[in-house]
Amino acid sequence: MSKRIVITGFGVKVPNGENNEELLHHLISGEYKFSLRNEITPNREDLLIGEIVKGLGELEGRDYRALPRIAKLAISTTSEALEMADLDLEDNGTSTGIFMGTTMGGTTPLEEMVRISSADHFRDMPVYCCGLVHYHSLAASVSSFFHLKGITKTVTTGCTAGVEAVEDAMMYLQNGKINTAIVGAADSSNNKVTVFGFGKIRALPFNQQTEYAGSPFSKRSKGFLLSEGAASLILETEEHALARKATIYGYIDAVVTNNDTESINGHDRTGSSMKQAVSRVLGQRIPDYYNSQAMGYAANDSIEELVSRDLFGHGVPLTSIKGLIGHPFSASGLAQIIASLLGFQHQFVPRTIRTDQWGFEHLPLITENLLKPSAKVLITSHGYGGNNAAVYLTKS
Image 1 (cartoon, one colour):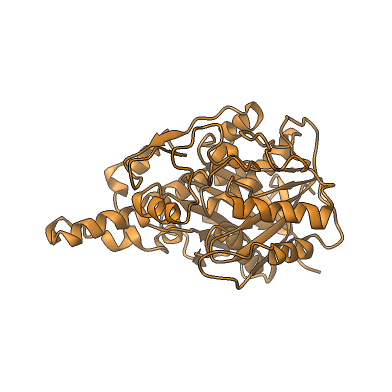
Image 2 (cartoon, helix red, strand yellow; image 1 turned 45 degrees about the horizontal axis):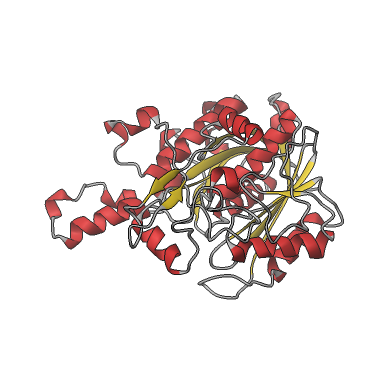
């Protein structure tokens, strides 16, 4: 029998949710605030983006200047998750693995390093420049900060990377190589190269006001709302968690991932591979609701609509938290998991905000607070390059 994998702690840092308590408040209240930027757009267009605004405390000090921002975000969310799990890492040694995901890696510091090198300013290049831009600095920084010498891996598969880090961790946990895993994801790419790149494929809502920019399940939205963020989970085998009398907040019942093989520059708009992943993760089960990756980008939202129609006949309520947090790339799937875990804890279903549902009126979209318990949730994630991921999350 396969070992059951439990969640004993979690931490989050996303726009309108810079810790668990704040995310809970904003999920229920629907209050939000984003930033308007024009210095990173091609023609000084206004662009609404999501930012972490409260700072990172001591991690912003000189002692940590060699760490990229994504690493600092991940350390912050991992600290919150570890405190919640009441886990003593010194007692766990190499039995704890670290699995981190990122989509864009260190593109923001890379921009600066390219500027310095292009100007031939060798003396201005920091001696730690390579670590600022290296993708694996994400997991390696978490390992170093918490003094863990065990398995340390960084997954870079696009926006599904956070969920795929969960999948990797589960395999190590289930085969007995480790009994505890720190799993997380972080991205911080509110920069010119990202904006120019996604702007080129018309995926960003230039000059669109707050009401519809990045509005899930609305055909008035002209693209997703770019944001930064991180999220972390503490995963353990159920046996290990029970032995140390840990509080269990939920179970990762199953994760299924695949690739639609369509193109490195997009994904299959028929949604067939996403539907296959969802079918496999569900088996014959029906979730209480469906926490989707819909984010106001037509290519994504239309696939989520097809999953709802073809697998559930629009009979299962669905929601998206992207109207609240924007799209923080790899962290988005884990943020969806955390939103649902908070729902388990506090007996509510996260709702979709900032949408008029125009063009998707037929969907059973949750747009009002549902103050009722839930126990089983489908979570979807898909990304540039064709990877798809589905998670079945249960309360017990």
